[in-house]
Structure formats: C-alpha cells, structure tokens
Image (tube, one colour):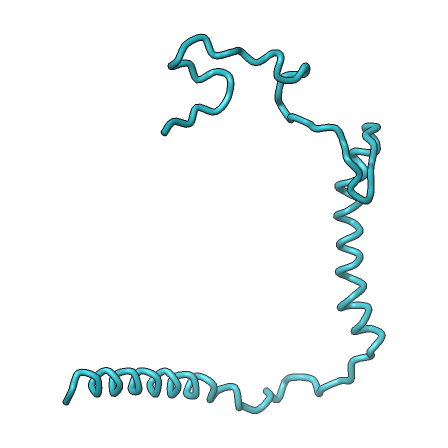
Length: 117
C-alpha cells in the first residue's frame, strides 16, 4: 500500500468510527416516554412570550437599576447617550499627576512607563 492510500484509509476509518459512535449514542433517545409522566400539554403562546421575553427583560432592568441607582444617590451625573465626562483615575492622587514623583535618576522607575529596547 502506498503512503497516500494508507493515510486515506486511516482517515476514512476514523470518520466512520466517529459516525458510528454518534449514531450508537443516539439510540436511547428513541425510547418511549415513561408511564409515570403526565401527558403532553399545550403551551399558551402568551405565557411562553412572557417567560422567554419578559423574564430576561425584567432581569436586565433589575441589573441596570442596581448599577445606576447608587451613582444617582451619590449625586453623580448620569449622562445617557455617551456624552463626554471628565476623566477619572480611581485610587490615584486627587490633584492629578502633580503629586506623582518625578524620576530622579536613569534607573528610577518613578514617573511612568519604563520600557526599554
């Protein structure tokens, strides 16, 4: 057998084996419904719509309220629509970069990035 033919036979056998395993695993899915289960009932479209649209919308509104309300209570301006706001540095010096130490030597790591080539 040539190398090319041997590769093709191996690939084909792997694909066929994988397909057979998938089909064999799907066999139990064809089983009958257990006798103890209740018969099928119709689902009301309004109830389904309420469940599939209303509940996610309610969750979205609750999360939005939990995020926005604390800021409003603190007196922060809420600017919908992406209007420009003042830059913020959380945990940084209150007067901006004026309080940051300047580098005092070549090896000093103060004052910003220290990338080297």
